[in-house]
Length: 294
Image (cartoon, rainbow, N blue to C red; front, side):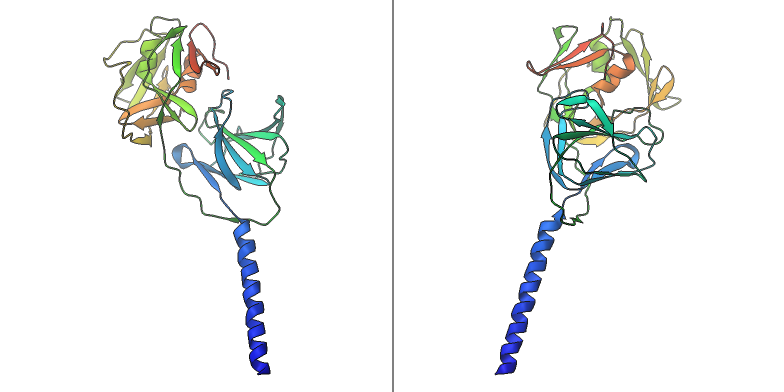
């Protein structure tokens, strides 16, 4: 009888220990967010909570929320231009920079602090094209068990905002991907044709590249500024090579239902025309009389 009691007591204690361990493990499991970029490069960060939107100050409107401390990892050959900038919510001008060592950085401060992660890999010249906005909130100190990240599926949504070119409404077939607006090159070239920032679009067969020539009138190819079927969108990253006045440039581009779309700010930066966002009226403004500003 005594042996039976002891055996039952041992089993009860063992069961309680296993339940406690399972509970602690469940609370410690966190999600690691993976953001895929060009050429197989990607960025991950720990303790991901959710995606949200914020005011577009030049780096898109998508913002990620994570619980601190957060470990950011750059996967790829990182350029020395890569950085992580920290600013307080009430002082976006007061920037501090987080140290990146061996392609990793640890973010610990959480009280009213936002971060801009600017991944720049070898061979890339655009310091801000892959900007990631991160808001870190207070978390706990429980050691985390990180889940294996999975590549995020690409999704494009039709841009609901109106577009003005030099003060006039222009209808574009444009899409939002990862918080940024993407347009067809020929649509943009047609829309600003005849202005001081017009540009020509052609194809360099010898280099198998799309060639852009700045300050040259655009030659219409037909079909510009038309809207196609926006259902059943097939989206993939494109490997199209872009030449600007004969020199190769790095830009983010996607193929949507067989057509190449480019980030509006990339084109504005290359051709030096103004791109602005009127949040109250929900209008994207293109101004060829203004210079591009980040």
